[in-house]
Structure formats: C-alpha cells, structure tokens
Length: 266
Image (cartoon, rainbow, N blue to C red):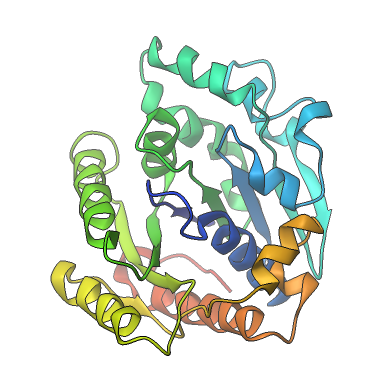
C-alpha cells in the first residue's frame, strides 16, 4: 500500500508546490510508482506540470462532487520520469464550499484514494496555503506530513499553527498521522539567520530536519514558467540535486519508521 505524504504549510511562498512536484519526480526517477495530487484551487502545480487549468476537465473538483472517480481524472505526466497527476482547477474553490455542508467532509480525499493506494508507492498531496477544508482533507488522508520551511523570522508561527492543526486531525480524523519532518527551502547559507532558524525550528518542535537544505536559486523561478519541475529544467543544479537527496533521505526515514514497517515501499 502506498505511503501518502501531505506537503503542507499554510504560509504562502515557502516553495510548497515546488517541493511536492520535485519530490514526486525524484521518487519517479528512483523507479517508484508515484501519484501527485493538486489540492489547491490556484492550480499552480497543475500548471507547472504542463496542463492548462482553465481548459481542463474533469479534475479533482469533479471527484469531490462525486461526478468522477480519481482513476477517471488521472493524467500521466512525462517529465524527466513519468508519474500520474490528479489536476486541479479554479472550480475546486466551489468544491471546498460544497464540502463544508457534507457529513464526513474531512474524509473525502481519503475515501477517493482508497481504490488507488495499492497502485502506487508514493502519493504526494500538494495542500493549499491555508488551514481550510482542503488542507484538512489532505492531512486526514495522509500517513505523514512534510513541512517546507522558508528560513525567515515568521516561520516559527506558521509551523506552530500547522502542528496545532495536525494535532486536531490526529484527535478527530486520522490518529496515525505523523510529521515526517521539515525541509528548509529558499535557503541562503551565507546568512546566519537562515542557519539559526532551520536549526531552531527542529529543536523547538522536536522535528526531524531533512538534509540538505534547498538553496535559493533563480532556477526555481524559471522552472514553472517553462511548465517543468526543477529536476527536468535544471537536473544538475544544486536545487535539483538537493531534492534528489531529500527524496532518498525521506525514503529511508519512512522505511525506518515502525508506523510503516509492515509495508513494502521499494
């Protein structure tokens, strides 16, 4: 059964979508079967994968309104390695409103994923930059959360709020949810502040800080404009190599975690 990883941080601009896209492609390059899901009505991930959200149908919106199954909306993305994508459109904002009125609304994504979990090794959920119902759905469906963290002064506040939400989800919807760790993004190793914040967040909250940090680079701005991941756009760049290393480290962390010791994620 595939491991479901939610990439989440309610603070925008922390390279959350970049991280979800890069990890999914890195795992695909390592030979794993990967499903990537765009839970954000802004559909930036869908765009970055080369699809046009304005002309796309069906999408995750149709799944949440029970008009289609996830299998019916999957699109195979041929980047540097192939993986499947569940795309989003702006209509997903309407689905969010619809979910608020439904019983069991926080479990809609988890239920939709059930028939597909055995088909993938990794299922990566790109959550919106908010703590609304779509993010709650992502956390309720996930085995673990990866938190992208831009190393700046306000980061502590965002991580603390997300961890409070994770605790609520564990209490009411998904007792097995774990925080896998933190990824330092947009990292400027020349500044002492970046290094201090990365270390302090790990220490303060008792979270695993994955290595290496993802360095700040103009390559990350170029990649989505070309509708590619950083691994396809600049595979030998420091950022791409960092995400390849991070994916491998996360694989080892998941294998070592007793929570998933009975599953084969090779």
